[in-house]
Image (cartoon, rainbow, N blue to C red; front, top):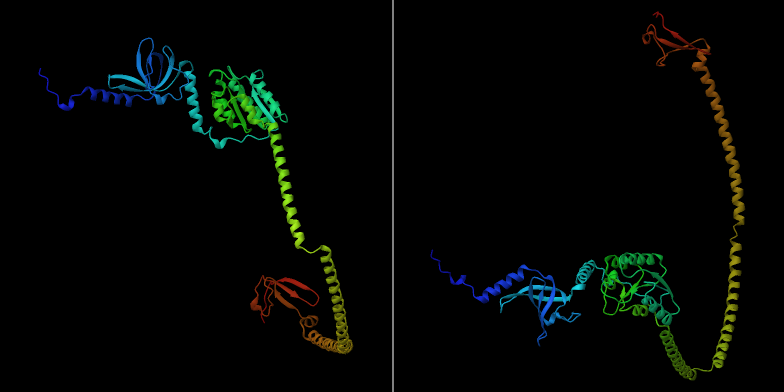
Length: 449
């Protein structure tokens, strides 16, 4: 069966093939971690590393360029087990796929280092490392708390430094295991306990140097969160200067060593005394200079001012003069007031209201007598008229009529006076009022006349 000829676009050159394969590899594979043994290690004059990573069944070529070697803490060599963080690529010149190494570390600590980096990124994203959460370290702490092993050399070094530098302060030791199973939990609990007691102005979390495994308790998340939640300022001094732990990043301040932590929280008393002595000398010299300047100024002013005794005599003479003028003015004023009062007294006597009051009192008494007489006369006339009207009323009133033997008949239910028989009917209740009594009656029969 004949094969059709391919078009020019379907034909790959070797260069095109290798380039597109490299692109596919780089897009498909993310950055990965690979563990293996170094072999065929080479370091040309360019400074780049070229080697092979292998295990019992396979191998892969690797390249680590010079700009990626700055953080490398060891010298790679053949036979060394390593953990490599790498991108997958293709070396087009030979058509071989290879690993482009981003970072490299010994395989023994690789797993721990991975866990360290993962926790560091997690806590950093949560803000546990932020500077705005860090508290200032007090300059002159009264009591310093030390969270560390009770038998470690770090504690002896710290106590020795505190005694030498800052004998005025107190120290409280909070003993904890600093490595091994369960150490992280006990360290976290002791941090919380020391913080809740509020016995110290600052805490030191510390231990001596060791391997990554030895220091791992200080890389546990439970310790990091206990440090973050601690309200007492806390300095972390773990290991040697090159050692960094998660607790270092969370602490309010990191010290490179336990001894440096002790120096960080304790002012040097000898240095403070020397500095105070220097300040004292500077202050004395300043005061002397200040006094000398003012003494010159006082001498200058004393020459410009008159003698105080002369000035005092002038003031006394002026006071005497003012006193004489004041006495003269007061006497003159008193005399004028006496004349005015005499004239005023004469006018008041002429206008004395006592005579008018007596006259008005007599007039009021006369009017009162006349008023009483008029009232009595009016009352007598009213009483006489009332008696006359009573006699007339008694003569023509209904009571007099009743006394002569007549009666008043009213309807019991309505109280209307019965004037003729058309107002009533048989069976109606009537009330008959006599002169001295009332009679309730019932109509049995009506006799019209």
